[in-house]
Image (cartoon, rainbow, N blue to C red; front, top):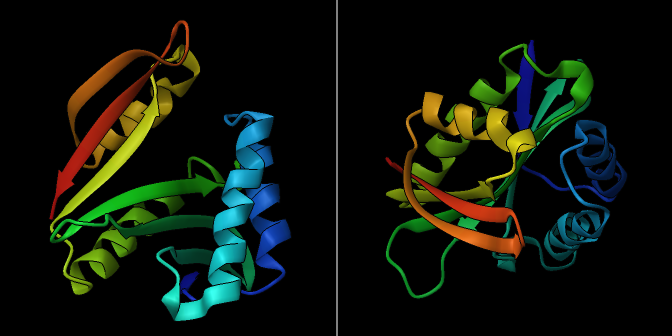
Length: 158
């Protein structure tokens, strides 16, 4: 049974690192960025612009999302991170997590969610995930991250 939690705890720094590393999708330099967002929420609490949702099975965190409102917009949110530990992928946890994330965003006045990902082949499952759950590909910038690695923008209207 999956439960959700929004409270960010100091031990989530290691948990988030473990989840991200397990996926094999992210560059080494991206890990400190993810952890910085966790630390921001720990340090600032509700004053932080970063919101988290953790999916747990039997008290163990197996997946998480990080999202927040986009400054100078009305109801637009960024989905900064969504990741499921590799040991738990393919079991529908990501679907449940994103549905609950969308619910929380909507409760916060959100109407648009923007997710970004790479155009590299190894990110094809990520792009397929967004397609499958109703996100629309709205823009693409070639060679954004580096030559041969573009950025795709997916948008979900709530």
